Length: 124
Image 1 (cartoon, helix red, strand yellow):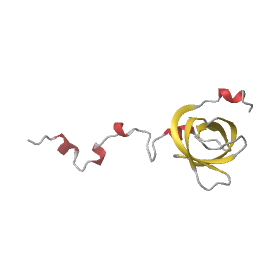
Image 2: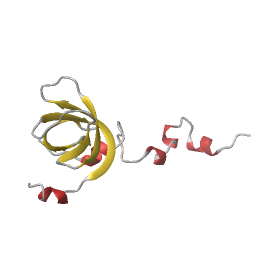
Image 3: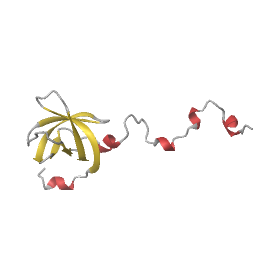
Image 4: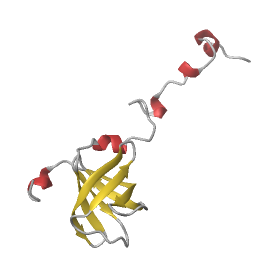
């Protein structure tokens, strides 16, 4: 896709941190992810020298390490095109969540050792 074609791709605007490793470097660098789509992301890395064409690995929560190439770089911000598509909603989900139901909506009675009748009885 050309740069004009990619402007219509859906993106999630967000603010989260990720670990970025440049090919040839052992130490990952913490970057701020500003927006994310299935095919790439825009991030910000203060003081890190990143240029177009650099190969990178990005550790995204709930997804793991994704390989990609720097598509553009300007000042502290840069864009990465992923080698494989991801589901950006998985990255936004809380870490370790096994269910789609938020914790504040889950029933606590299922974990209670008391029977339903015992829970209804009011002790005085």
